[in-house]
Length: 344
Ligand code: FAD
Ligand code: NAP
Image (cartoon, rainbow, N blue to C red; front, side, top):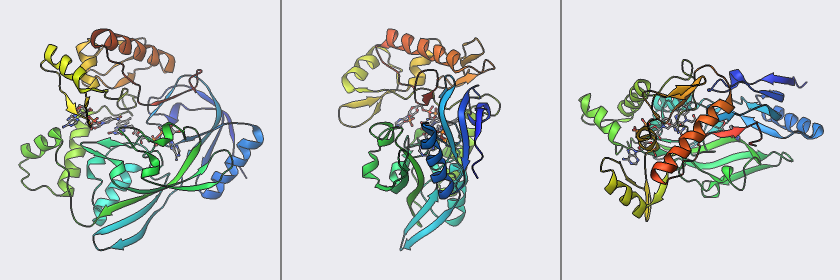
C-alpha cells in the first residue's frame, strides 16, 4: 500500500530549508517500494525526482513531480582478497555514517570524505570530493534503475564518466535514473592522502607525526566543524558555486594582476581558481539582504537567513555571478541542482 502524500512541503527535506511544495511525495525503503513508486508515477504521468538528504538542491518553486526519498539501508562485504575490500552499500545509507563504520572496521580510504552530508546514492551524482580526494577513486560499480521503465543497470566507474563535481548523471543520464547501490573498493592497509595543505597544516599543528586513517578522519572532522556553517543553524547547501576550471594562460594573466590569487593545477593546460577568493574580492563576503546572504566566514556558502525563498537566493547568486564575470571575466557555475520555478 503506497502512502502517497500530495502537495507536501519540502521545507524539512532540504538543508537550505527553502519552502516548496511537491505534487506527490513517497519514501522508499526497499527495491520493491522503489518499483511500486515508479509504476505509480508512470500511471499518474508524473516525473520522478529521487531525493536523498536534500543537501545539494535549491528549490526555486513548487516541484511538479513525485519526489521519491530513498531510504534503503544495507552495507555488505562482497569480497575480501588480500588487501582489497569490496563493499556494496545501499543508496539510502548516510554517507558520513558509512565513513565512520568503515573506519571502525579497518576498511580504509574514505577518511578525507568525512562529514559530507547526504546519502550514498547521491554521492556519485557529483562525485563528491574534499581535502584532495574524490569518490571516483573508490567506486567499482554503481547500480540503479531507469526511471522510465524500472529496468535495472550496473555501470562501471568508467561508464560513470566522473569528473570534478561531475558525472554522466549530470549529462546524458540527467533525470534518467535512480541509483540503488554503490560498490566501493577500499583497502585493509592504510593509504592516507595528506597532500591538501589545510589538512597537513592541521596535523602539524596537532603534533601528529605519522598520521593514520583515524588521525586523518579526526582532522577532517575538526577542520570542517570549525570552518563550515551547520545547516541546522544556518541553512545552506555547502559550496554554492563550483571552483572555475579555466585555461592556464587566463589563470596566469589574472595572477599577474592579482599576485595573491591562488592557482591550482587542474589537468593539461588547465587551472582551478578558488571561487571563494573571487567572490570575496568582489565584496560579497558577509553581505546579507532580503533574508538571504553570503556567510561572513565562508564566501562560497549562501545562507537562507529566513526568507525561505529559492527565488531570493537565486537572485543573490545571479548578482554574484554577474559581479565576478564583470571583475574577472569568469563565469561561476552553481553547484547544487535547481528544481521548481521553471528551472527543471
Ligand atoms: P540530494 O541533495 O538529496 O540530491 C542531490 C542530487 O542528487 C539531486 O539531483 C537528486 O535528484 C540526486 N539524487 C539523490 N539521491 C539519488 C539517487 N539515489 N539516485 C539518483 N539521483 C539521486 N559536496 C562535496 O562534494 N564535498 C563536500 O565537502 C561537501 N560538503 C558539504 C557541506 C555542507 C554543509 C553541505 C550542506 C553540503 C556539502 N556538499 C559537499 C554537497 C552535498 O552534501 C553532496 O553533494 C551530497 O552528495 C548530496 O547528498 P544528498 O543525499 O543530500 O543529495
Ligand atoms: P579551502 O581549504 O579553503 O580551499 C579553497 C578551495 O581551494 C577549495 O575549494 C579547494 O578546491 C581549493 N584548493 C585548496 N588547496 C588545494 C590544492 N592543494 N589543490 C587543489 N585545490 C585546492 O576549502 P574549504 O571551502 O574549507 O573546503 C575544504 C574542502 O571541503 C574542499 O575540498 C572543498 O571542496 C570541500 N567542501 C565542499 C563543499 C561542497 O558543497 N561541494 C562544501 C564544503 C567543503 P576543491 O574544492 O577542489 O577541493
